[in-house]
Image (cartoon, rainbow, N blue to C red; front, side):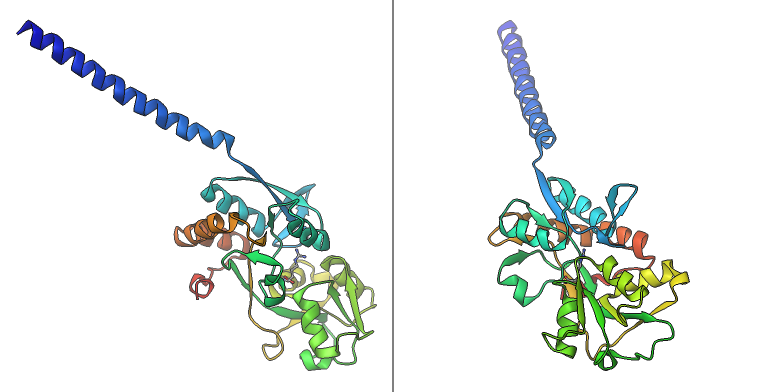
Length: 268
Ligand code: ARG
């Protein structure tokens, strides 16, 4: 009987020991999160409300979005404002991990880069002075149009004015294109709808308005941009699907745009 007691005590203690060991190995598993890999994210922070500078900090919907997605995927992120053209150079040259900049997924870019699953629906729109005689995209013909260099806005205007039109003025960032419009150096700016609409709303003193034209401007989807073959794509696709499904995306979207997102269209 005594022997049995001793044996069972030994048994219970070894069981406790094994459980404790499992426990520690689990904690050491989660302390791994302290050593999470930090990814370098590059952006052009001159595209409010997606990415812009506020009191020396880069903020915007895209920034909140990447933080949520990276957290889900198990990474830390550091966002660097490098500018639009350099961003592409850095992703191609693999000096940065993710391009985040309201970047439209299109066939031309897909030849050189990999994209995540879509996270935002967009289209180009025309920004003009309130008293402009421009009523639609066709009216841009013969006018001087300012765009950000290397954007889908440039592609759209080239399709209307011709590729080497001297009436197309290209700028390093979209804010410079808008400044050109305000100073009278251009008759219109073509850029993403959310950006120009917010500009008009936030700057009533500028007396500008936007014109939609679905016959000239197609639906576009933004994606995170990776170097071709990046292994990050799989992790981030999974994480994006998760934040779309668990309400995090809708919460951020509502915070920034005051309306509910159409999540279904992102999954088509
Ligand atoms: N969506 C457009 C494109 O991909 C414009 C993006 C410009 N983004 C920016 N952060 N400046 O061409």
